[in-house]
Image 1: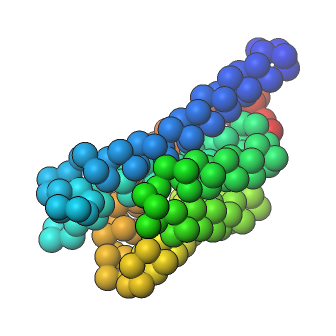
Image 2 (image 1 turned 60 degrees about the horizontal axis):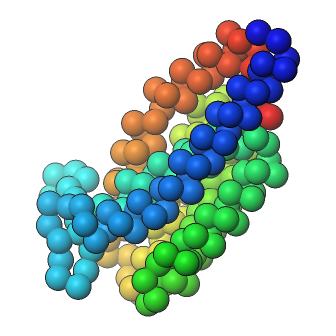
Length: 190
């Protein structure tokens, strides 16, 4: 594969990851009101994330967003990774219910920058570890900031963390595959 082919592949995959990243935000907002084993009147729809632990269904998309942001950065570069964070926070603020705009945007912005801060120094040497560690940092920050700003309570922290972690863990085989394929094709990160 030529350098030009590698650049085209990297750009196309980066664009796909960026679109998917942006779509996780409206998907999370939609899921919270429509997908769950229990939908609380005037509240979120909940899903079981572990025995006897429930979380709003949107946590699944937030876990996916953390991994996708890492993949955007890997394919398109640091500038696009930061741009995705800013655009994602704006989308989050635009789509959040009025009462949750600040909590939603702040949690998204801070968690994605926490993810960025951990992912960036690790990504070139240990991609899978970088995605796991950065996503863990991001999902904890997201959960704490959102719950505290939205509700003044961390009562549902464990469910939030577990729900997001499931999506990160489900993405690990795909990330490992990408790393192996990139090495085989000589496709260096952006």
